[in-house]
Image (cartoon, rainbow, N blue to C red; front, side, top):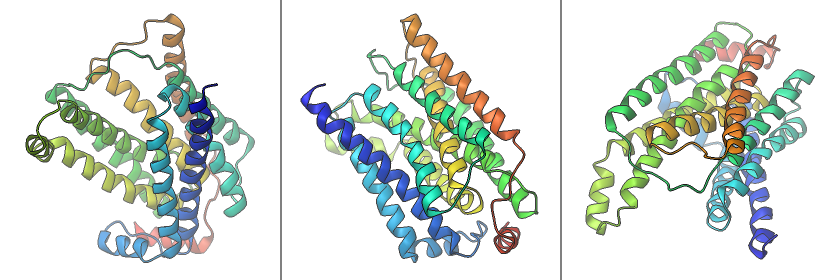
Length: 308
């Protein structure tokens, strides 16, 4: 192990733990709030930013992301991503201790399989030349239906919950994961502007004039609101891993094709990537077919019904 790894690996563990702890603290704060009514976005935003507990959780998330940024500058993605993926286990521990959430045996195995899927995808990464150019037409053809599907699935799940149906957080996590995946595609497209080494004025004009900047902002804003509503209505131990794995798998699959990046030349790495994609898909199918368990108290369920 290199000297850098002695710093990078513990920092990655700290990043994963801090980020996931922030999500659970947010969930705890959301449990003390009235049901988030997404038809009244300003009121939702005010509810969030006036909650000290929610702001504390958000600050922890930002600290975790800052640690991830630092560690990615000193460690390869192939080292960082598996550790971050394994950090999902922290969600189970924190949600069990702080929220008293319980997962059934089959759900625990599914969450563990999600972690394995992301690790397999990370291990399939290669050192091939990175591309930042994609056809705008192809990007639109992928992004637009993905955003529509993400919104339909996430809102549909929340509305079903509001109408009294007992549902899991799988589809809410899947829908928000698609939106976060589209945001990741927009970030990669914007990175193409940064790597051209333009003068500062041209660089700023290029970023502000790029439609991807507004796709990024819109997707992140909508995904965050939907994710907070899903986190309030469902178990964090289901919503968080499903959303994360969906976003990662979507970005790898769509990004590889759109940016014309080569698949792994090594049969072993190609097998790892395919195995990770198939495993992630199977887990989503299995989780979606699980018999839903009640996740809210009767009072909270009434609040959810009024919210949507």
